[in-house]
Structures are given as C-alpha cells and as structure tokens.
Amino acid sequence: MQKVLVRLGVSLILAGTVGLGAPVFAKDDEITLIHTGDFHGHLVPRQNVRSDGTGRMEGGLARIYRKIQQIRSDKENVLLLHTGDTIQGSAEVLYTRGQAIVDVVNLFGIDAYAPGNWEFVYGTERFLELFVGPEAKAPWNAIAANVYYSTLKEDPGTLFPPDKHGKRVTPPYLIKEVGGIKVGLLGFTTDRGPQVVGTKVTQGFKFTKGDIEVEQLVPHLRNVEKVDVVIMMSELGLANNIRLAEKFPGIGIDVILSSDMHEETRQPVVVTDPATGAETVIIEEGQDGTMIGEIRLKIKNGRMTAWKWKAHNITDKIHEDQRIAAKVGEVRKAFVSGPDFVEHFNPLNGAKLRRPIDTVIGYTAIPLHRSNFSHEEMPAVIEGSSHAFLTDAFRAMTGADIGALRGFRYGTHIVAGGSIKLEDLYHFIPIGPQIAIGEITGGQLKSQIANAADGALNPDVSKWTGGWLFNFSGVTMDIDPYLLPGQLPAARVSNIQVNGMPLDDARTYTYASYWYANDPTLINVLPAKNIRLVKDDNGDPMDGADVVARYLESLPGRTANPQVNRIRLLQPLPPSPAGFYVMQPLRGATLTPAPIHTAKKGGIHRAADDNDSDDGQRQD
Image (cartoon, rainbow, N blue to C red; front, side, top):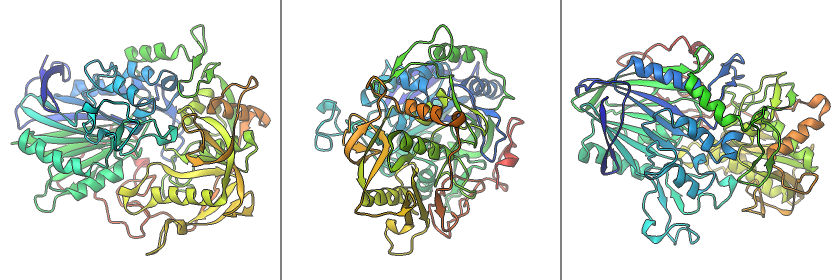
C-alpha cells in the first residue's frame, strides 16, 4: 500500500494509507477529496420532510461509509476530510460524551478533521481526551488554527498550566504528501463555544474569527511549506467562509470545505481572483449525514488547473455497509429496546435515562423540523415548528407566561401523522439541560429578541453570533429584517405581545427554558429571579427531553399540534444571491445582496449528480 507522508504543524510522521492500493502519481495528476461534516450524532437514517424531500429516509453512517468506499474504489489518490459537529445531537452521544459515534467513525479512516463548536460541549478536558495528542480516542488528525489556550489575564480560572498559555490547542494545519503532490490542509473551528451549556464549558480556551490566521498561514503553506494545493477545512460557516475567500481572493486557497450553517451548496460557490483568475471553490453539505461531497482536483506544476464536484445524497438507494451497520447496532443496543438496554446517567445534569430511546412517546399532527428555505413560509432562520412544539412544552410544564428556546440549527425531522420517539426528543434536546421557570422583565425579553435577530440577519456576517432567531410560546411579534441607516437592532422588532397583550418593558414575566447548574442565575443565558426547576415525582432532576415527553403524554391522543407562524415577517427575506436555495441569507438582510457566483458553465468543470441525488428539487 502507498505510504503517505504526513506533516502535522511542523513535525513529520509516517501515517496511514490513501485508498486501497493507490499508485504513486505525478504532479500533473488528480486527487479526490471526500467531504463529510455536521453529523450531529446521527448514527441511523432520519426522514427529510423539507420541501426538497419526500419524507424519505436519508443519512445513516452505514450508508455514508458505503458511498465513501465506492468513491475510494472508483478513484485514485483519495482523502477523506471531515468537518463540523460530530459528537453532539443524539442520546447515544450525549450519554457517552461522544464515544458512541467516535467508536463508529474511527472505522472510516479519516485523514483530517476540523472540529465544530459542539465538540466542546463536554468541556475542554474531554475535547483534549478525544481529539488531541497521540493517545486521542478519535485519532482523526484534528486541526484548528483559531483555538488557543487562554492566558491568566484572559481567563483567571483557566484549567491549564502556564507553559500552554497562548499556544494553539491543536496543530493549525496538516500536510499530506500523496504521491508527488503536497496537500496543505488548514483547519478552523468556529469562533464560539457552546455557551448555552454554560459560560465555563470552554474554560481555558479562546477562539478567533480566523482572519489573521488565514492571512498568515496560507502564505506560509505556499511559500515555506511549498504545498501544491491548499484545502481549508472550516467550521466558520458558509457565509463567513465566503467572506474570507472574498477578503483574500489571491492568497492561494484552492478549496474551502465548509460546515456549521447546514446549508447545501447544490452549486459550488466560486470566488475568483480578478488579478490572476485563480479560483477558490467552496462547498457545504447540509447536516446529519444526509449528503456528502466529492471533489476532484487537477494539479499541474503546483497549481489547481481544473476541478469537478459531485453531490451524493445518502438515501435508501445506497445499501448499508454491513461492518458499519453492525458497529452502529453494537453501540446502540444499550439504548434501545431489548435485553441489552441499561439505564444511563446524563453527564451534564445527573438525570437518569430510564427507558429505551426507541419508545414511542406520542404523535404529531404537523411536520416537526426547523429547516425551511429562506423564500418559503416560516423560514428556518426565523421560526420552526419543532421549536414551537418545544417552547409550548416548557411553558405548559411550568405554568410560565413565556416558553423560550434559542435558534438551534440542529434537530431532526418528523413527518405529519408520524410517531415521536424518545430518541427524536433527544435529537431536539441533546445537550443535557434542565427546565426552569424564573422571572424576567419585558425589557430583557425585547433585548433578547433584538440581539438574536441581529446576530442572524446583520449584513456584516462577521458579526453573526451563531444560530437563528429565538422562538417562543406565549409571544408573538413582527420582524422587519432590514434596518434603515442609523437604526439600532431593536428597530427590527415591533408589536411584541405576550399572551395577547402588548409587551410592557417594565413588567415582570415568568419565563421558562434551559437551565444549567453551572450558571444557576441564568435561564436560556438570561439573568432571572426566583428560579425554580421542574423535577420528577421524587424531587430528582429531570432532563429536558423527559419534561417534553411528559408534556406530550399529557396531550389528547398524545398528539402535538403546535400553532406556527408566531413571528410575522413584514418584508420577505432577500432572495438567495447564489444559485441554490438557502435557509439563512448568506449576505444577511440586505435588499440588494451582492451576487455570489456559483459553478454553472463556462470554464468550470462540474459533474452531473449521481442517481442517488434529486437535485432537480433542490435548485433555484
């Protein structure tokens, strides 16, 4: 088998193989990149009930691996590159602190990995245990140029010794010499941790937005390391990755493998350097393993001269790989019905998982998800039926005036009339919160709404805060996505009503949402008074998913039917500036978004999608 020379940062090691029996090839030959990302703990397939789906099952690690192996067998010189949130998003990964999916994905043969913000959900020490060093439990070659150990000045409570302060947590880049081609892989995580879980969850680490690191390290890879091609693996999100490519068009980035926003670039974004004509190709493949990407690069004389991209939808047309399916079954057997089920303790809140996750809890009268495109009714960046369902549960189970939830991008899909299993609730609430009720003012609520809207719609995408608009039960409002010159973010929001009455900034309201013991004075990251927790009949802590399960079981026919369209858009969101539908406007809320160029024709090489794709339903 072909040896691959690997350089991690500046140290050389011999590691692994590429493909199966791949021959050495010359500098004017091709390499193939397989891109996966944002698995969010999904071990098995889930439905797609969005407008581009048919309710069919998509994803599943066993099908993903089968497609990876098909590409490896069809192409020479293949690298498998993984980005984004992997160890968060399901009960199995929550109760094992990520180990359940790590045990499966370790079989994939990942060549390099850029971690996502949710990789830090179990704390910085667990991140190091999983991803860093020669004894890493997930030996995926994690690279992230923009995460550092904080100094005592930045973080007086840092967990790490002084000799680490200011240094990078992982190597910033990895060099793989495949045959005669030197491939420079530059990694980025997000510029934020999962702060909703607690202000101390990333204690000892600090993050940057990546601009300085791109400006410094891409020339270093080109001019010092003398790589032939630069691949940026980035969890900074599609909009910010486009921003960086446009800010540094001639710096030498050939491809950006993007994740975080869960968009699907059905036509790759192409940023062209006006001075040289060099291209940066940017792709992102959704979430939960429902799509993976394949991009072939032609390299000649140390330059990418052509490329060809293909999307692979992971549907039931792809047979499962039996070895991976068996491993998935092995890690799931302690969680599902059968003789191997055991109770588990939640590592984030101490609650106990007492029943199998495939237990049917109830049903839904409407589709539950948050993934509509920006041009559709109830776009995901604004609102989602799953969030309406959850906030109704928080409000009902506490008797609060308001139920609230951050605009999380992750979750699952449940078809109208379908059953809701406990594992579905854990896909919606996989981060171990308890549910609490407390007192806030109307002014606090208004600020929370305005800040969330600005963090998702600001035309300066470098100011985005991650996630989408908060959703509420008991609250309705109007949102104008666009700000006039000089207006403050609060001007986007008007006609806020709580239970049918106009919001009073000075009035006290009861408010129910996520609560964590590490931040006992906060509910949903909002300071609150007179906080009380929802507990079980024995006075023990209840996981948020259990609270929602009790709510569902209390409904007539155990059937959820949440009222949606609680947020009224006064103007439609801007049209997509790219050649594909988006969930969140890639230029923010601006009436005249600058176009984003995509690969359609001309000198751009693009392959038709496989038979396992339905691109005709997914393009503008």
